[in-house]
Image 1 (cartoon, rainbow, N blue to C red):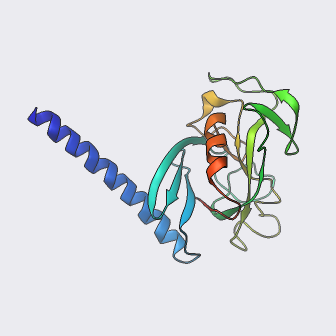
Image 2: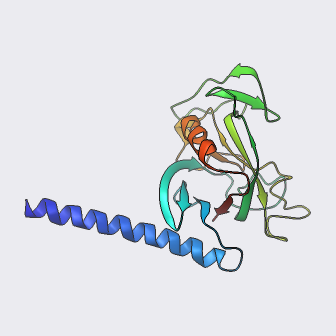
Image 3: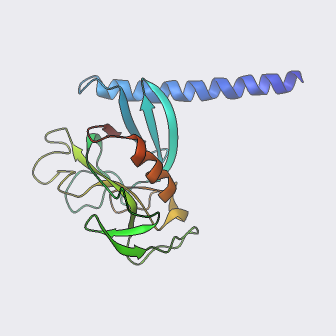
Length: 194
């Protein structure tokens, strides 16, 4: 019984330390940018998206960032880093797994791959959170603009690849997860990608 209690204590301590490290990382970056009450933090290293409210992680999602790495240059297919905001939201009435083209659902339901296969069409499904960079010269401006690069947080037909870099620049999520996130975040919410 004592071993179980010790193990439980160590597990809780480790979890609290990890949360503290994440919040510290966010605060250290955001100190030069803006104050925030709510923020989405995308960790490229962890392949996770953390929903932070009042300096506490309230939800964690597995994601996929770019298989080409990090970078802000247009046409690089890399995931841009830095502070963004949710500029626009699309898909409120799109059914789960609904394929969107040009941010519009035309009635097609995507086949969802739960193994390591890739889709031939790099589907954008269910919901879209379109990001705009806020850092002039980093992710906002000529040749590096996240908004003009169509950088989204969105659902994917390649759910089996979630948790590893697999996208062409966007942040991919499982369809159920992006629908849940879409419901609770607003236009203007900060998104920090590091």
